[in-house]
Amino acid sequence: MDLSENRKKIDDIDSKIVELFKERMAVAKDIACYKKANNLNTLDSSRERALLNRISDLAGTEFEGYARMVYSQIMEVSKSYQHGIIHPDSAFINNINSALDSTPKVFPDRAEVACQGVEGAYSQMAAERVFKVPSIHFCDKFEDVFTAVENGDVRFGILPIENSTAGSVKMTYDLMSKHDFCIVRSIRIKVDHNLLANKGTKIEDIKEVYSHEQAISQCSEFLKTLPGVKITVVKNTALASKLVMESGRKDIAAISSYSCAKLYNLDILKESVQDNGNNYTRFICFEKKLEIYPGADRTSLILTLEHKPGALYQLLSKFYALGINVIKIESRPIPDRNFEFMFYFDIEESVYSDNFKLILSELEYSLEGFKYLGSYSELL
Image 1: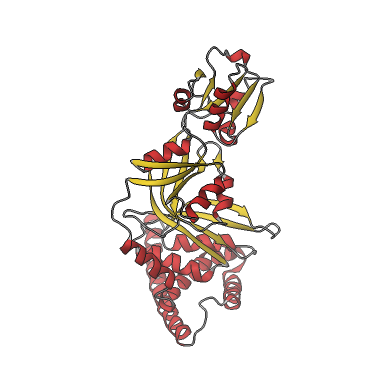
Image 2: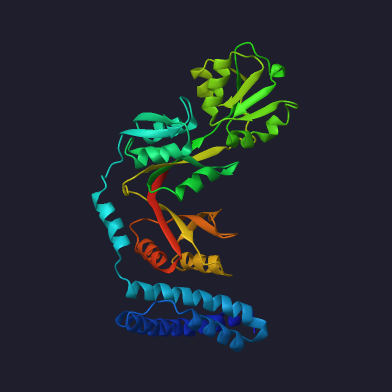
């Protein structure tokens, strides 16, 4: 047979498979109704194992692996469908719906905002992009920003979460699991690092460079061109500039922003010293209250899975089954549990879609640990 004849056969087979799939889902619905009436769980692990083993036997050696993959996906779709029948409503989803109704339709122009660092910090630039008129409170440590929001000292906090060159800001991720908050915005800031020093300093005079560890990582190639120069980590790039200015010395420099050069009256010895010219840092803006502003199409979650083979694959299958895009996964160790991890997920899906509410409702019931960090839009 030629290619067109084989494709016709495939089309005929697919038609039969779809009809059988619909029949299978109708039976799954009957099972869900029975489970709901008898207060039974959607998940039956022993039944799943037995079914997959049976599929392996039926498929034979050549197709066993492929068949298990297909049926694992079919079972995830079936469980998702059953879950929507058994749990059509949940307190969690009701809270989200309430937040959608009660959140103002326009993001505030004015706000008191906590940022880590000192005047000139990149987090300040992020705050000034998110709000037209921010009243900024500078904090010494990242955790102090979370605390200021939790205590009601400010309404919003802003912290860096990842960089396009150096990767995730792990300190922020570790703190996110410890504090209660809701992300309401994220923003990307173009980061241009410069080598700054006091007036009259020459680059060959430099014996020490101050900066934040992320900036140092982002400028690693440039720093290799300064052999013998000591690298000193400080809490942020703006503080590095401030320390250089206050010292009055001409043998130290800071890796910091152009705005800090003007703010602290420093010379720019070399511009754009970052390794990658397309260097962006992403910041999150968060508050204590659950608010979801119009246009929210990103959601951040912390998920804890069972420590067993295939757990992450099964979780990803749930998103795939509903056509939801996972745009970031970050794993962090769980304290006091050896070699076990929690996962930070960023997903891309409109907060108004039925699939969004279905996946969150299902994850809340099916996972060992589930924490909702907020739904929001990102400013570019």
